Length: 136
Image (cartoon, rainbow, N blue to C red; front, side):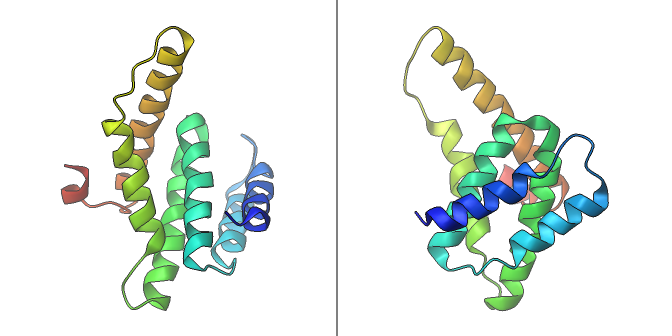
């Protein structure tokens, strides 16, 4: 993990509130998409965004837009490939295959994370980050 990149992304995302304007959100998207992105850094950024998205559905669509912008920039720079797309595909689909058993509050937390995952998947599909084939 590159802690400097993770902290930078978290600090940028912390600037957002429920009252943030589209202009402020677009500025955060621009700042995150220009971070020097080596493969491991992209994976770290994807994990930070994913965790925030599944735990805060109010910003899930914003996070999906952010991922789409990052993916588009990667596709242009990397001849059609996207690390963030690959990483988020693994993260979102992995949630469905986590069959560990737990009870009590852990079970409720797991249900909420799965619900957040489904909402985020829907938002990623809505902004055309994922195709119909990927969702099914």
